[in-house]
Length: 321
Ligand code: CP
Image (cartoon, rainbow, N blue to C red; front, side):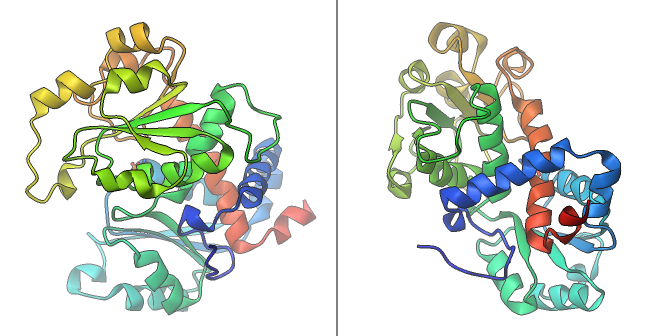
């Protein structure tokens, strides 16, 4: 069931039908092929606000650089250096940004659902840059584009069959991961099988109810053996809320090591949304190895987020260039 918010918002992948995913990826390709000069006219003079209540390197920087590459003006408001510290609400912060001319707000927030609140309060398109343990839709789209590229699927129709026969294992702290949730909802719509892997404290049984095409496999080696893609996740210490994890046992069972990869999945693409903790969920040699697509994910993030900004603000400038 699709929910309709402000035109151009992207808050959850639940709102992304396959046809819309195809249009976003086509727009991404089109923008990527443009010259820097033409691209800088697409959103010339438009105003984009980045509102971040949690730390970010990749998402914040890529949205900001993407907006600037399209000619938009950006402003960053962070919880650590703004009137949010004085107790100003999300609603009032949003209304203030709107009064200052913001036409689109990119929001990262620790509370699941915060982007809906902001969208309702301001009527502006809101791009969800990660809300609590809920959703990270632009991450799922950039992950999809990375898979398409790495699995040699560029040029194939983006439809319900695109990833048929592809198994993606997502391993680690699924419980607290908005990235896992968004990917587990999006990838099966394109035909992929998603295996969720991790210990019970980080992967509750309910996670299997994320939808068709999603299954829990506790044994990492079993999951790896049939996978074309393996996505590793960080243990989110900031969200553990007293939950104890035996790190030595975790590393022993779930770390992606060279040995496991070369023995069980020698052709698999290795992904990680970042930030990664080398030596915990992934060995440094694997992160830097030939199967790793981790830096490519970051580059695809810049490209996909440019398309999401154009989608949010209207493609008027795109028709003129
Ligand atoms: N993947 C991701 O969201 O990274 P950042 O927290 O650095 O934005």
